[in-house]
Image (cartoon, rainbow, N blue to C red; front, side):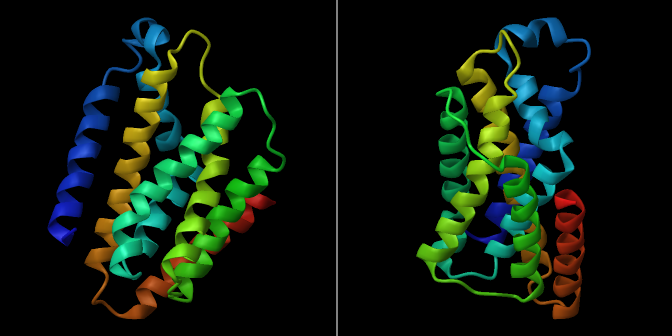
Length: 195
């Protein structure tokens, strides 16, 4: 995917998310039956989720073309697996720790400008997202339909990931100290979430 395509997709998803949630307070009764708005807002309102998803997109821009282009699939795949574990009534130990570590490790990957083989990078992204997906799945509101809630958090997750890709693409040719500083800030946030 070209940089322009990623930016346009991120913008389109963000506009969709904004339009869908613009009247969330007025539409609460209607959403209780579907869950789309709840799913949409969950990743946007949790700073840990938001930072992890944007960071993964940001980091992916400096990876091989295969990993960069498949990162959204690894993100959604991990989310589906994690949500499926929650919806299946199974437990996943250390969810909050896993979420905090995803922010911290994404920050380390960005700060060190690490390039990983596709299989390793994709597996790491999917593993990060299992914890986020589990949290989303476990917090599905009563009365929400599975499909609508899943659609909501999928749109938000992809929007955040593509926004991170767009931001990373903009900084691709800039001074690497900016990228390293962003990574350091994410490491600090991950430590704060873990504490």
